[in-house]
Image (cartoon, rainbow, N blue to C red; front, side, top):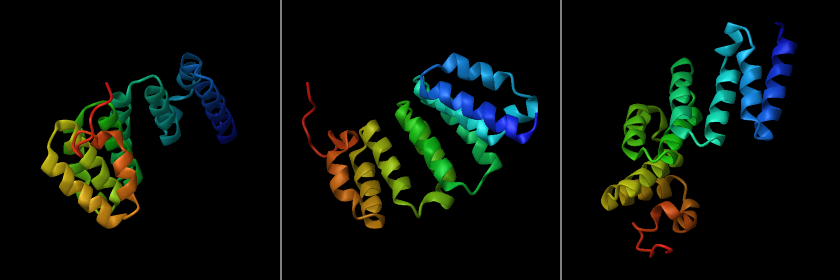
Length: 161
């Protein structure tokens, strides 16, 4: 398979994913040669399928593997943490954030995800500390945080019943 054929196969798989035809997309990806299957592009397509089919935790595991091959990709590290959060695995997300903290702690997104996870665990103090740090780095997050449902209980908003 040459590069052009690989790109075309990925585009077709992306099209199927966009249409919600995950099985068809998986069939395209499974038909690829072994070397292509382990490429970053194909792994990201698998992650997208998992997320769109309601499996963010499985997607986070693929993302972790990608991080080992791309250890300076802060955006990917934060995406892994967000996927763990989205799966409701707040403790696992916090553990992941601790493991990537030296490379990510300079970003407001790092502290925002951490705050969301602490909120999910009901740890008000840790949530507020992380939220303060996120706001210090990105002041524009202050107003957005007030509207973020992850912080409703921590910030004292009544749940919508």
